[in-house]
Structure formats: C-alpha cells, structure tokens
Image 1 (cartoon, rainbow, N blue to C red):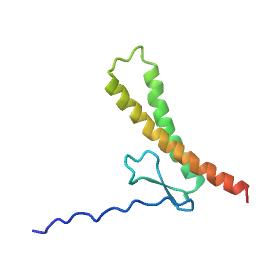
Image 2: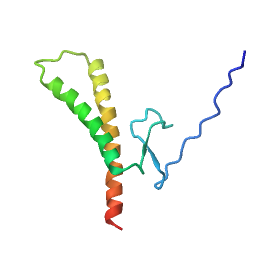
Image 3: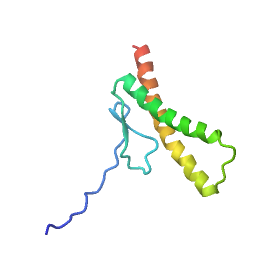
Image 4: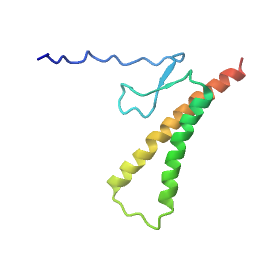
Length: 107
C-alpha cells in the first residue's frame, strides 16, 4: 500500500499585466484556479462571454414570466450567486476583449 503524501504548499500567483492567463474574478478563494486565456482569439472570447451572459439572461427571463415566486432569503441568496458567477465570468472575458481592442487601436 502506498503512502499518501500531502500536496506541497501552494504559492499564490502574482498578477502581472503581461501575463497570458488572467484569474477570473469569480474564483472562490484568493488562490485562483480558473483563468481566462488573454491570448485566445477575440471571437472565441466573445463566444465564451456571450454564452455565459445569455444563459443567465434566459434563466432570469423565464423567472420573470412566472406569476409569483415564493422563496425564502437563503434560496434567493443562492439563486443570486448562481446568476452572479457566470455574469462576472462573462464580464471578465469582455474586459479582456476591451483591453485587446484598445491595445490594437493605440498601435
């Protein structure tokens, strides 16, 4: 039987403006594990942002068409977080697109 060894201590990445990978704002801790590839083609970044934003929009539109929605504050808080995470991811991707387009226009 092999012994299980613990993972080595994790070193928090230091953000660098020229880094290829940008941590998503929606990471749940200060040690990010989810990133955006800032060098990905703009159409791919746009599709990823659009997908997340449209998914949340669809859920909210469906919810708004219901006559009444009964729920307690815990469920409402969980639902808000469920919507906020992909919206924030989409905004992060849009930020990357904006930075790339501004860099192009200044060349």
